Image (cartoon, rainbow, N blue to C red; front, side, top):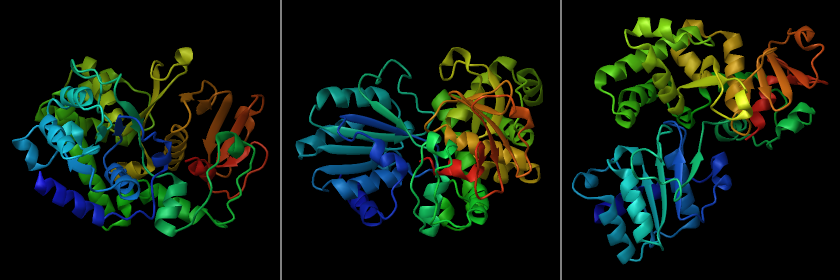
Length: 389
C-alpha cells in the first residue's frame, strides 16, 4: 500500500488544475459512491486528480488505478479495509472495469464502510447492473464526453466564452465577443479538438491507439468476447466509417463480417456505449433508447477524420458535430421531415448556401448553417452549438 500512496502523490504533483472539465461542477461529490463513465481519452483520470488536489487532503484520500500490479495479489475490499483503519475517508478507483468482480466488491465496500466515500471511473461500456451485484441503489452514475468547442477554445487557445442553453442559441443570443472570427478555430476543432490529449504530439497515432484498445480490450473484456470477435468489431467500425451516416442493414453487415445477423445489434450497441459510434433513434414513446435506429454515425468529427479519411464528407461532419454536442443536455431524435428533432424543434443541417425551402411550412424549425459567423431569425451558425457545455 505504501507504493500506491507514492504513486498517488506523484500523480497529484503532476496534475494541473488550470482547466477543469464541464462535468466537475455537475457532480454531487457528497454522495457516498459515485461512478464516472466515458470513452477512453476524454479526461476522466485528470479530472478526478484535479478534484482531489483542489478539495481533499492526501492524509485521508487515496487514488489508485485498478490496472496496478498491486491488485494481482490484493483485493479491493482489503485495500478499503486497511485504508479506513488508517483514517482514510475518500477512495478513488480508476479503470475499475479492469478489475474482476469489481461490482461485488464495491457493493461490499459500500455496505461495510459507511464512513468511506468511493469514486470509481471506467469505460463507458461499464454496466453497474452487470452480474448479480446490483449497484444501482448505491452508486450515482455520471457520464462524461469529449471537449465541447467552448472547452477546446479554453484549453487550447485560452479563449473563455460563456455557455448557452439551446433556447438562447435558437434566439440568436450568442455574443462571443472573445471570438471575433470563429470559423478557422472551429475547423481545427472538428479535425483534432474533441480529445484533450490532442494538446500533445502525434494526435492521430494516439487516437488510433484509443480505438484499438477500446475495440480489442475494453469491449471484449466487458462482454466476454474472444480476440477474434475483437477483430470483427474493428472490421465493423471500418465498415461504418466508410458508410456514415447510413441506415443500418444488419443482414448486409453480417454477411460482410461473416457473423450472425443477431449479433450485429449487440456489437453496434457495445461500440456505441464505448464512445465510437452514435445511433440516431426515432422518438418512439419519447423514451431514450427505445426508438428504432434510423441512422448510424461515428461518435464525433475527430473519428471521421481519423477513420474515414478520404470519405470525410463535409455534410457528415456537420451532422455528426450537431448530434454530438446537443445530445449532452438534450434528447436528440431523428426527424421524418428533416435531419434532427429536439423537443418541439426541427433542425436541418447544411452549408452556407442551404435554403429554407424544406422547412418553409414547419413551425419551430431551424436551418443550421456551417461556414457562417452570425445567424438571423431561424438561421443559426453551426458552431454556436459547441457552446452548450
